[in-house]
Amino acid sequence: MTTAQMQLGMSERTTRAIGDALAGNGSGSSAFAGRGASLRSALLFAGPAVVASIAYMDPGNFATNLQAGSKYGYALLWVVVAANAIAMLFQALSAKLGIVTRRNLAELSREQFPAPVVYAMWAVSEVAAMATDLAEFLGGALALALLFHLPLLAGMVITGLVTYAILIAERRGFRPLELIIGGLIAVIALAYVAELAIVDVSWSDVTYGSLVPTLPDSGALTVAVGILGATVMPHAIYLHSGLTQHRSPARNDEGRRKLLRFSNIEVVVALSLAGLVNMAMIVMASGAFHPAHADIATIDTAYRSLTPLLGAGAAGIFLISLLASGISSSVVGTMAGQMVMQGFVGFRIPVGVRRLATMVPAFIVVALGVNANDALVYSQIVLSFALPVPMIALVIFTCRRDIMGPFVNGPLMSVAAIGGTVAVVVLNTVLLLQSFGVNVPGFGA
Image (cartoon, rainbow, N blue to C red):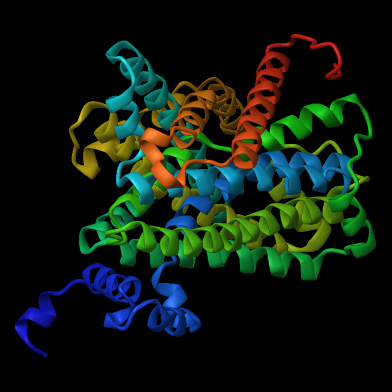
């Protein structure tokens, strides 16, 4: 192996291989088609959606799905299916924006909107980044504290150090970090496969709950809104456009179309897995707690209840999956925060400083004696404020021909994107109002 080969990083080799595939390896599109038929060729383009998908398996989803399964059994599985469909749409649009324009959502916002709007968007996005990281960071810390009987502050310190160590892998390029995140996602998925093997599951009821929309009572609507609010996350919308903007060297429209095809396939596969994990969370909670323990609504209570109900093994698996979720989503949240800052204001800060800045609020919350589960709930309320900002901006840009050219949203896609935005904004507004005790007519008590 030559010195040049030794210096060639994994990401650069991957980028070069992607470039060869897009160019047909010198033999035109037919060569690309033959190569694209293989699994290895498809895996060249995998990564961005896998990283973004961790936002749909973060500790906020754990808390919301736990409440849904323990209180309502399988009845709200259809909400996860619907929320996942909306998430797929917006992740596909975000990826398309990065591939076509080679700029991320924050950068385009800085270029296209007036300065006061840009700074307002940045401020809202920074608050959302801190709120997101608060939930993710606390999730990992809570898992460590319960798993190893540590003080919560000690769990937070360990979570912060592990997160920073993983972020250092990005210095070697995008592929090592993607592999680490993919490995942690595999841990979460396998943990819930194991959980489903332990609990009793009525698969006919699972099928019915996934396909038939039902709301057992007025409170179920509130939980359903919470599931949707925990699924479509602001930082994930920003992140995906940044992950695709420089990753693949498409030089013309034909190359971009090929990239979009692979990107859309990856979005469907990665977010389908995330959706199945979310459904497994509800199924596990239903099998373990419903209906005899329907009042279980917090992570620590669920852990302590699992041991007498299903054994220490089930409780341990639950915490391992939460730990993998907290660490991986905290890594991705820090990446998204860096991308947002660099895009809106044009400068980048060291990852260690960024990691410290998003850790401080979590330490303050715990030092003030705020309950960790309450902090998870409050962080979701903050995200409800921030969510419309990236969604509306993304719809505006992808519907503009002067920005997207021939890749502008078609009429059907535009209607779906606008409809999805309106639905998420309205339902998150309802969740926000209900969190403050405001009764919204038609949306239950």
